Length: 376
Image 1 (spheres, rainbow, N blue to C red):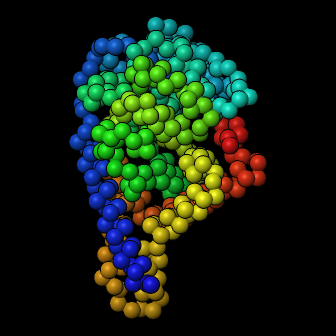
Image 2 (cartoon, helix red, strand yellow):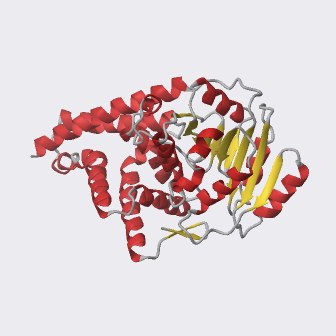
């Protein structure tokens, strides 16, 4: 039985390595350099809830674009901090470029806060292209040009990708890399633009762009109104409706510090993981077993050798080494610090804790709190 586990772990390690390498090659080679300077109007749409810490940097970067025909619309989503006064000042100082609006209260019907904010923004937009981006992102001067260039070059209707993630503390370095799990061991993202199945859909909501026709055809964010992970779900809606999507590397053009500290990262990622598992016990148990077998077992196989002093099996050493190499390649490709991949076992232990905590909060009826709102 132990021997069988060794072989199964080795096969999994080889599969993950090949998948990760193929995805890295795709991310490095598929993105086109920004060339578009004019064309269809772009509406840059920013939902902002309690973003006084970030929104100024975001708007400053978006006001310096090389692309000519664009507007910036920012919605204050019932903030309780100084977000609205900051937005008002930018709208006053840049009336030809920035429009600030106050968002409506969240309906009692099944709407998540972010989806409701983006739904309102889309109704105000005038552009042929709808570029949604988070209030904590910072853009290069060519980010809009990059998005239009790649949407047109690849002839797709929806585009998203990995931006550059800034890790400001050890706690963030410990948890945030779990967001790369999808392209490290689960999904061959190079298949996204050439297949039709909605299951092969992926997006990161920090930056997503739609052709307006495609967005309106699926009913926009109203079609995913109750979803916490609205980015992945709306990418699937686009695929179901027959539109083409793609996932690329946006690291050179957009950056973000997603969370500030361990506590914020833990709660934010718990929310996303809980939604991904759909709060179902079968999904939770299956996910937990997958984490234990695929990510923790290879290191567990080392324990008998470390405890007894026996010479290390070549099969076990090769399996652990291949797992670690895969994670190093994925995270170094994303530009993270040298030590981050070596936090690997701790990352997945905390992943298990977040999975079960999210399920417990949901079952108890308490729910998870994010930005002052209860999320299911």
